Image (tube, rainbow, N blue to C red; front, side, top):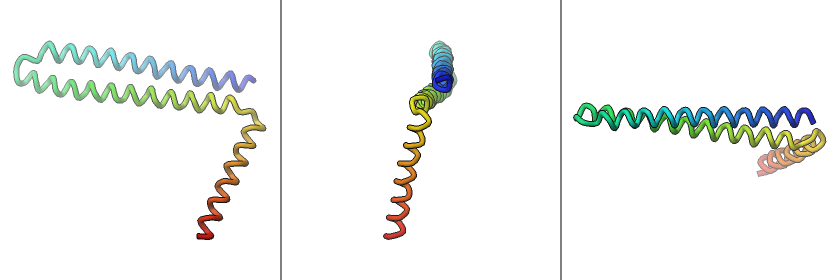
Length: 109
């Protein structure tokens, strides 16, 4: 029971960190975007705007990836927490049988 609670806490903490990182990245992107728009008067500033927007896009993509990774980690942790020791062993046994059957089929072919 304590192990389940530990994994749930870890999963929740990971999701919380990812959320916080995404919010910070969005705020930074917003600041960069506002700065770029305010300075887009000349051709040089337009080039700077494009560079800034590229950086903003990278930041947003990185934040999105971090959120997805945290969500997957939280899901895996929750799934592990759901399985008791006996269930986990049974799942491993089935997976092992499937792998062996696949190996035998490959050898036979």
